[in-house]
Length: 278
Image 1 (tube, rainbow, N blue to C red):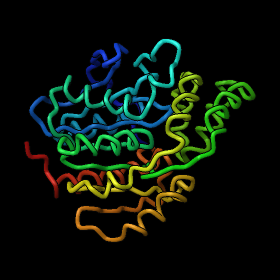
Image 2 (spheres, rainbow, N blue to C red; image 1 turned 60 degrees about the vertical axis):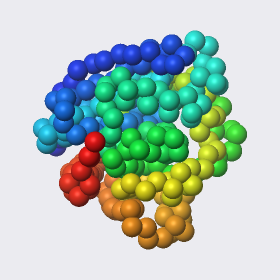
Image 3 (cartoon, rainbow, N blue to C red; image 1 turned 135 degrees about the horizontal axis):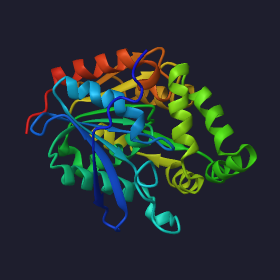
Image 4 (tube, rainbow, N blue to C red; image 1 turned 120 degrees about the vertical axis):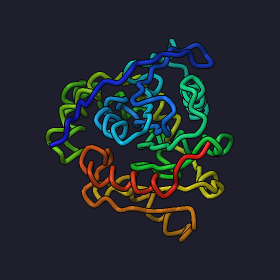
């Protein structure tokens, strides 16, 4: 059983371009190769605390953001749609790298944390020493009902029950479920609705294909919803010299929680083969 809580790291705050207060945690020593572990919608940096402590112990400096409206990061007043666009949230992450003094990083994005980085590839690809995702599709096209459905579910079941139900469906690792449930129970459904409206339709396939750096797609075998979109994309783009695909048969949407050892091993091997060079 893994220590899901891990160490807390050092907390940092900075102001986004629109003044929103954002938070991240840092682990490890300055001067070490930098890893960013970025969570998905409804979670927060606590998803990665144990992984951050582990990778710091392997000689990396690890940055773990809380996206705006998540965890310790604030949300713009009034939840304006323009305050939660993919472009704005991606700019937050560029600002985080600047604040942390991280010029080039090994990026690991889960779900929304991968979507935002796919957007970043277009204008900030040079900042990625390597680019890794799991639980992230390169494109998405969901119906407009997706956003309102978030609020409806919270009203029907309540935050606590819905969080426990979602946690049970997210990971098969029973010890991880209380962590997932706690993150989701503390998540503001208004943030969930507005972000869902923003990310329900996108296509960053061109950004991914234009990126010339080392890229790793970790495919959770139990992440069926994402895989319905991701696997056909990977089959269509075929073999590419800079693209590696690693299957994690026991991995769900948050594969770091239920395929922990396999995911960590795959990332360490990938980074060893593609070290960050300033």
